[in-house]
Length: 86
Image 1 (cartoon, one colour):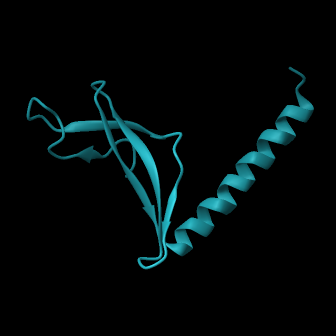
Image 2: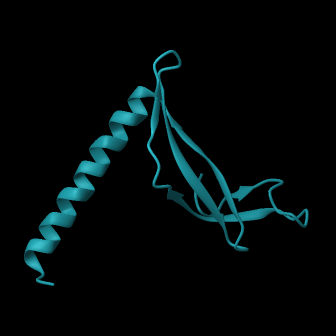
Image 3: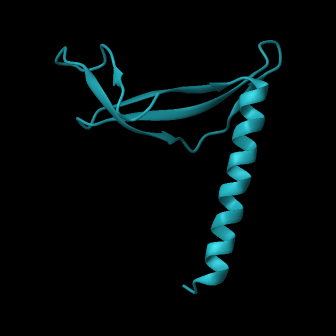
C-alpha cells in the first residue's frame, strides 16, 4: 500500500486514517513451510501518530525479490560510504 493510500477503519475517531510509513520491527521473521510464506513483524505508523502492529507476509517470489532489493540497497550504502568519508 502506498503512503498516500488510505487504511479504512483504523482511526479511533471513526475517520479514515492515512498511513505515513511502515517500520520493520526488531524481531525475528518467521517462515511457515506449510503455507510457504515468510512473516516479518512491522509497525504501520499513521499520520495522526497512532501505530498498528501487524505482519508483512511474503510468498517465496516476493521474498526473493525483497532479498535482491535489500542486497542492492546494502551495496549502494557501502559504495556511498567508501566515497564520502564520515
